[in-house]
Amino acid sequence: MSKQVEWRKAILRSVRDLTPDIRLFEIVPEGEFVAPTPGSHINVGVQIGERADVRSYSVVGPCADGLYRIAVKRLPDSRGGSLYMWSLAPGAQLSISTPGNHFDLSLGRPEYLLLAGGIGITPIYTMALALAHAGANFRVLYACRGRQDMALADDMRAQVGDRLQMFLDEEGARVDLDAEIARLVPGGEFYVCGPIGMLEAAKRAWQRSGRPVDQLRFETFGNSGRFATEAFKVKIPRLGMELEVPPNKTMLEALEAAGVSMISDCRRGECGLCALYIIETTGTVDHRDVFFSDEEKTENRKLCTCVSRVAGGDITIDTADRAA
Ligand code: FES
Image (cartoon, rainbow, N blue to C red):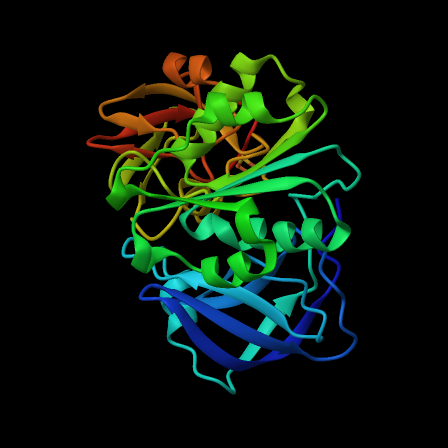
């Protein structure tokens, strides 16, 4: 896994709409260009109202021409990052990081199955191009709502041909995960990027297949829950605190802003470092992470504060060894 090594200034060179709500940004970094590997992301400094913040976006394509390309979906219940990005015009000054990668592609496997849902196509597209370039044996399954939501599909089709298979909700098409995994040769790897429901279904199907856990790799958006995003109250009896998590902030951000000393790393529901104990809730915990198993989510003892939320009520948590 590569590290975020450096922040630098950059200029937005151009924007192009791939779909009505997915926009491609071409970014020229200042200084030496650090080439991204497939599955990489760059961090971008964004402004949310008065507050400076950071968002991670997957790099699109090999970027062999020295430009970073990212695709940003405009989200109605966004915490503000996508709206900020969509407000930018060519020539805008940006602050970006060099590429990091939590979703590495390992070359040399006998076969690959790639699955993308919606905007999850961005790293999967890049991986497909890299695998085609390497002469690897692979298939790409791309699921999205309808034809007008397909981003990068024509371009990918031109480059990988029949290896790409589309599944459109509007046509009632569904990916049969068990059958697709069964077709994968032993030792083959499965890469998934999509909304949390897709990731959970993929994890369950992979588990049923009995294949090695480390041959399934995935990345999540970290913001797609089962309930609409709404404000909720958090009570922390141990610290004598009560705070509100607004719709445009994560619980982790709200706890940090209130001075609770938190531990975190991925901030996208994958590592579990930000998890806290649940004492009780008057609502429903919307577990949006891919760290806890289905059983653990049903037990409801802990939640990943970087992505999970509460719907229809408040929550009381224990910060255990954390201090204010
Ligand atoms: S910081 Fe990694 S799961 Fe929350």
